[in-house]
Amino acid sequence: MNRDKPVALWAVPRSISTAFERVFVERDDFEVLHEPFSASYYYGEDRVSDRYGDAEPRAEYNYENVFEDVLRPRESRAFVKDMAYHAKSLLGPEFAGSFANTFIVRDPKYVLVSLYKMWPDFTLEETGYEQLYRLFRLAQDAGQEAIVVDAMTFSENPAGVLASYCERLQIPFRSGSLTWEPREVRRWESWDGWHEEAQESTGIKPAERRDPELPEELQEAYEHCLPYYYQLAAHAIPATQRPARQGS
Image (cartoon, rainbow, N blue to C red; front, side, top):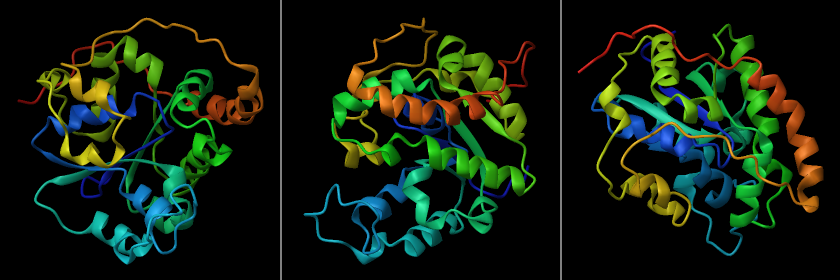
């Protein structure tokens, strides 16, 4: 694993990925970039989506400009959390090779029920699974180790999964990063309404599974996402069963 490349956590929506990201917000050895490619997908001159079509497109959000900014030298190593579909126009071997790629997935039933509450008109692409799997395969083809986090396993055993994640990335595991003080996170301000729970929380605590009921109108989307989820979840890392080396 190249220690100089930005660490990327590629996610699907509503996958507990922002809580995972919050762990790295609390660390002083990473600079967290929150969904930088979403600006390109929704607001760039070369944007892919018309969801915010009334907004004036902005050149600084064009894909190449955002990509260049993500890769620029920084005092601390970058940790990028984003959706693979946001970077759809860039996905290819060169793009995948620019990151230490990691992935977080969640049973689509949980994702779709939650996403439907936020965006009743979401597109299949905005469910995120297809492009996430595409990027996963690109990373594999580049010879990278597949580091996949299952969101439910993480919520049930946050310390164990985070320790395993850090071990595979060859970065220090810091148990203290699992707790924090509630506060607004400036990097999340462009997604008002999506991350309040993560901002108001005081840490990540083990959670129990609560199987949601899938509305009939989401069945088609569920069947679309499920095969990609199964392919990715098959590579999910286990929680570490032994004490991990801890950093300060």
